[in-house]
Amino acid sequence: MLALMLTSGILGWQLGIGRAVGAVLFSVLIGLPMALIFRKDDATRNAGRIDLSDVGERGRTLTQDSLFMLVLVLIRVFAAFARPGEGESGRWPFS
Image (cartoon, rainbow, N blue to C red; front, side, top):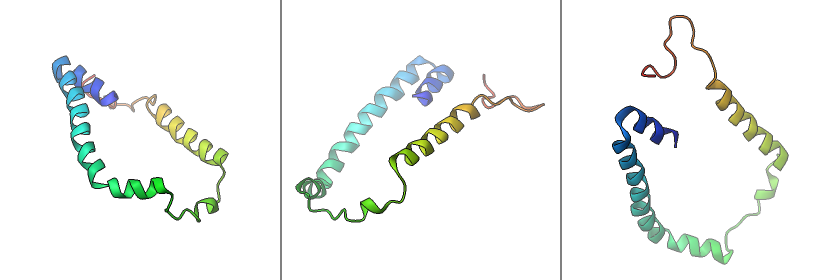
């Protein structure tokens, strides 16, 4: 979403809309053949014939996984608030 906003902000709203429409169109055009190619694998998975015996041996709990993801998101969010150093124009030189 951010990439689409930046595209429309820099190159104009026409290209922003074109990119959004193109993304949806290409996702459908690529997704349909992929669904046909992997139909057999999906049918096998839905029939329940996949071996999932090692899934329970992960070693981490859901809470640990959730905290890890939260920390990654917070690092990403707060990195965007960093001030540029002296002599630097910032992350986006066009803004």
